[in-house]
Amino acid sequence: MTFVQTNTDLNYIGRVFGIIFSVAILFMPFGTFFFQRIFNLKNPFNYSIIGLVLITVSLVTLLLNIALSATTKD
Image (cartoon, rainbow, N blue to C red):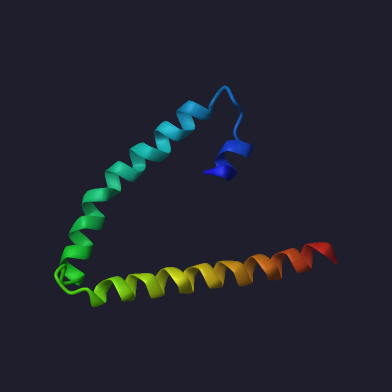
């Protein structure tokens, strides 16, 4: 959200957030359906899988950010 706030003209910030949240609400039923079919909601091990995926995505993003910032400084 900080990226959106800093790079959007103040005249359009409400519209941009409205579109972002509208799209998020539209995709919520699909996400609920997907996770109900993929995971057994009563198994606590599923939260470990989701946590590991989030950590992996965060590390990949961090490495890409470091690599891209190193190439732009040269």
